Length: 102
Image 1 (cartoon, rainbow, N blue to C red):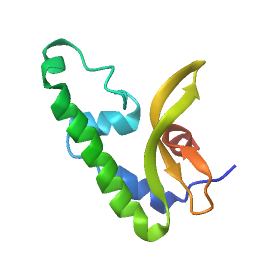
Image 2 (image 1 turned 90 degrees about the vertical axis):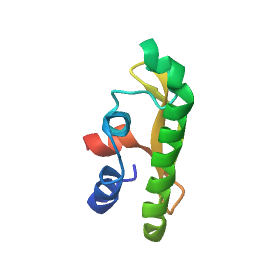
Image 3 (image 1 turned 180 degrees about the horizontal axis):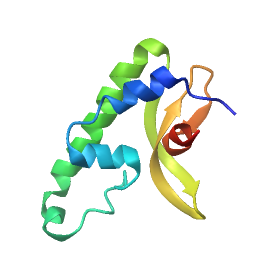
């Protein structure tokens, strides 16, 4: 299994702007937007732009390391979730949640 260097994790950790983006990286909010509820649902397009902005900044920060970031369906806890994944220069795909946990 590919291990993610600490500098890559630190680079991603510096990218969020605001509580929602921090919650995305911590796994408290879903990358699909399915956890948005209540009156926030009315502003779903704003949250989508926020997710894309975080992903764009993460890719820009990782580019000079040869890594990239994307979202993909990941099996977690017996269910499929859309999560952030890191793509190594070798092409190996590492889910963000497992990279942070190790």
